[in-house]
Image (tube, rainbow, N blue to C red; front, top):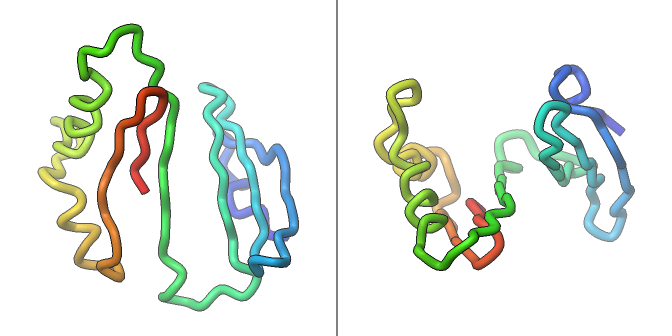
Amino acid sequence: LLDWLGLHPAWVLETSDDLSEYGSDLLVYRHVKTDAKLAALIPKQPTPGEDKAFGIGFRTKPTSSNGVAHILEHSVLCGSKKYMAKDPFVYLLKGSLHTFLNAFTYPDRTLYP
């Protein structure tokens, strides 16, 4: 089982599971500084150039229903002074399978699948 993030000191491998029914391994990492979790589903027989998928999800527990989490969802995708990407989805579409690119805000989490 390849610990593909293990060489980076900011992340620690917490668990690894064999998901034979999906032909993959599931690796769960913890970010040392923030305790954020990262789950990686790694194919056992990767197809170079074809296995390109990602999803990012994190808890957003609002203290009110004023829509701030949804506004932040859109703001994240507008870039910043340091990361000047006007619309990252446009760049992602150029190299993707053009299947699905969007973001979602739920009452308790935000997802960038």
